[in-house]
Length: 329
Image 1 (cartoon, rainbow, N blue to C red):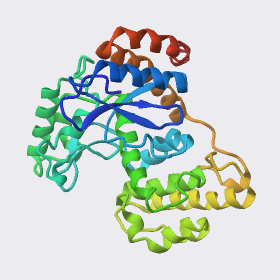
Image 2: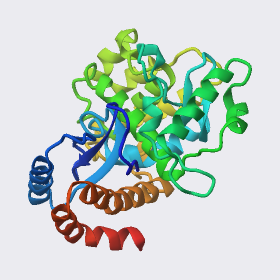
Image 3: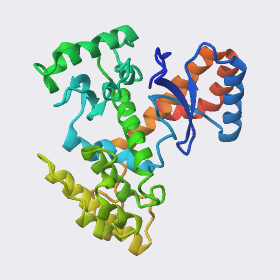
Image 4: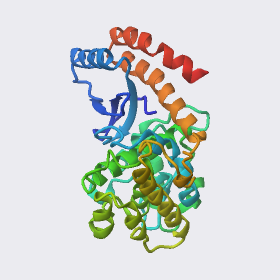
């Protein structure tokens, strides 16, 4: 979780609600204390608790993604992408980390292209949080080394690393950004079966979230709730993508079974065949997600309180005590 003040407008904290909606708390010395206090108190009264999560442009919370999909995402995507906890450049020289999560704003012409990297909690070898200057220096070193040094060969260029929580934050930020775009193409985005969301997010991860614009028949089939037909249209070209495509097809066919048999659309059946009626067991991903959210709530609430006043600390601490006990347990 990004619990330190951000040094750029692109990095900010969010109040994440239990149903995974978000409202921004800009890191601005000029933000009136009373405004933040009212915001936190109102959210605590309505929701019973708040979670502070760092992230760049995490507009709209987690984009209507089913929690079961978030829980399974790393297990689903890791065989295709791997996980790297350092900064590296991809084949076209863009700085990346995590599971292929872009932390490079140079394509948009940003004067601070390292800003996305500043939104993540980079750590020094001793476990302490890296300073903004150190993150910028590491980002620039990796960027400058391309194309001579790229991909996993970038590991030796820097010493700052993400921990598991940092990787989850990077992944979640990317998923949220993709979901925001995907929801403009799929009218049933928030209500479709979880398996369908999983497959579509996988395709977006491989091809970019704008892929529905050219996959017109696939998009029409999804919007019509014809997931079997969409599965037949889900293939795409690329090196080493066969296993991802096979997994996506399984998930889409599962979605059809969910619709046909009236199963719970929020349940995730991958990697099982939904025709068996057996939903997937919550694995390590669900435990990690729950722990990260719980710990983020505790630590994040303390950060907001210390930054904006003891009144928030006292109220949030009381609200989050049960969550702290669950996270530690």
